[in-house]
Image (cartoon, rainbow, N blue to C red; front, side, top):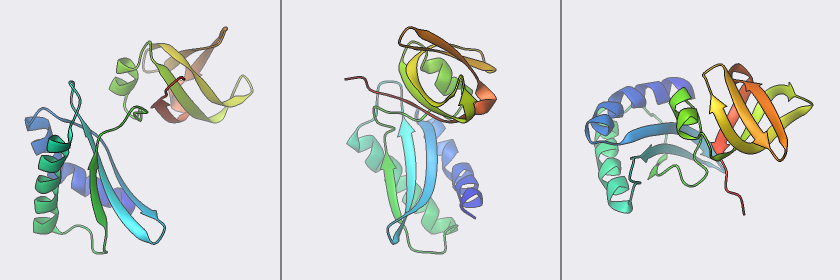
Amino acid sequence: MSQSIISTIDSMIRPMIDENGFELVDIEFVKEGGNRFLRVIVDKPEGIDIDDCSKISEYVSEKLDEQDPITEAYFLEVTSPGAERPLKKPQDFHKAINKNIFITTFEPIDGKKELEGILTSFDEENLEIKAGKSMFTVPYSKVATARQSIVF
């Protein structure tokens, strides 16, 4: 059910988001504690601010009220992807080249299911990650989750 809701909401709001120069990074419909949350994660090249989130929130809320795709109670959150931006689509990985990333894999790569390092290249089939002095080639199809990561 959650995936069909996300799909419906995506098609409802993506045109406005694209037309206004924003990027729809992700939509999540999750249960945390006893509450449901609809998270709309957006960005733009120069970064997003609270006014942008407010504008998008008003639009999304209006569309949701009109079409009412969610029958249960939920909280709407419009947010930026933050410093640890999720990497979901091939273009996200292209943008993350030469940045620190953290990935989990469906199966071990050189004995590891988690890798953190610099994404040195991406060709839509493989990721090349430099972790310390080692280089890892990870098939894109084996990546379970990925995000940019902060190094302190």
